[in-house]
Image (cartoon, rainbow, N blue to C red):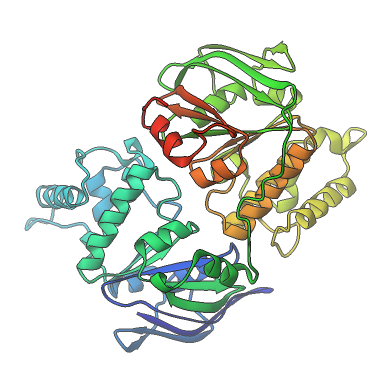
Length: 494
């Protein structure tokens, strides 16, 4: 499949500008670029969601036009989007065969055949799951395997994987890579979109870089360095991926004692200090997010105490947590961090409305100024502050979430997976925000599944496994390295 000189224009925005890319049989083609570079639009042109204003789409050398995704699917093109398209109330079989149901000779759905085929496909991918199980009962990784299973069922020629590991743990990601390599061996053309450069080098044969809606370079992955790719992406060199500033250990800001919630975490005790970044590491399902949702009172806990500045707090809901000067940037920006149907301006003012009043009414001049300042300081790419936040790229949505909490006069900032799904340039902007908070002697807690990020930005690291703390490692310790952190995350003793 080949796109030649594709241009796609939306009101006020050129989303693709003379973009070209060629996908070959038996090849894994990486696609990278900053948020807003045009990757999502390119994917939607490839899969028939958008029709371009200019340019050509060629399949096996023949010029083609898609009016919708169904036509693209008929030509053997499938896409597994970052936001999974799963019917959670239906079984694995029903999700695999949706739109492709097989009927028996008497006109009824042939579940005997479909169940057998579904079992075969899931077994091929190393998923020993009961195929009658509802997809809502599966983990994110297994749901993603169901999505990929659809592509296998359709015998797709071109498979597009959009940020496929963004919600996966290391073990699940390795399994996914094995499946992708098997698909490559079967002659499939695979477009692998990722923000993780180590994945590009590990998996891809070639890589295309986009910037500002344009094609910048297509190079063999084995003949390019990480620094060169970053330079292509952002138009400048980034000498330090983790610009950590020196920090000083201050007084204890937050202390958690004997925190437990059945099935989530148990007997958790830790301290977080002012002027430091405390990192929380662990595998997917270790209980880190659940722990902080309990501290923030977004979810109920069974037992435990919270102390802020040495004083015991009875936090019963998030509003009380905010009054206790805790800010919590949630992991799931779409479901928990933003109101996607509302504007950038409305989202930015969500948690500090009380400070934006003039008498009993909201002061829209203040709200507007706050939003404009936030957009400027965080370099949020948006046409204006009235743009619906759901229409922004993932990285810019993340910046809106951060901006929302920056307007709260908090002392303790919890960042849960702050750079998930955002590009290298945007990541560095997030790290600089963290540095600025540390310089202001704030207490910063960062939950991350990316070990280089944990090591690059943390002063201390707490490692969790199955809801328990396995290790606490100081930056000056000999154990402050990826190997020992992973050892603790897998249950080993340091």
